[in-house]
Length: 131
Image (cartoon, rainbow, N blue to C red; front, side, top):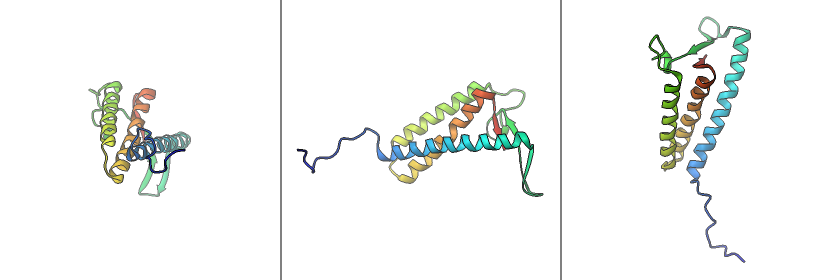
């Protein structure tokens, strides 16, 4: 018979890290699903008026990094930018392992969840679609 006072064996993954990784997975799935939905809509109708005269959704392809930086004539190859994104995700994963706050773990999980999108896009198309 087991002693109720003995602690249960650990799964090896700290609870805060597990929460951050679950949030990262949910973010990746939601990001890919929303991207697929919006791309499908924008391929059928190139401009979607959200707030007439103020805010439209328009498909653009970003071959660089944020806001198209480093995407001009001397653009870095997609594999370089993907390698940088993967390296950043590895650093964030290590930071997540050391997280001591639920908010920190959640924030890192959200950032990790957003990172693979660009890697997926660069592997498939050489750049990322933006809206």
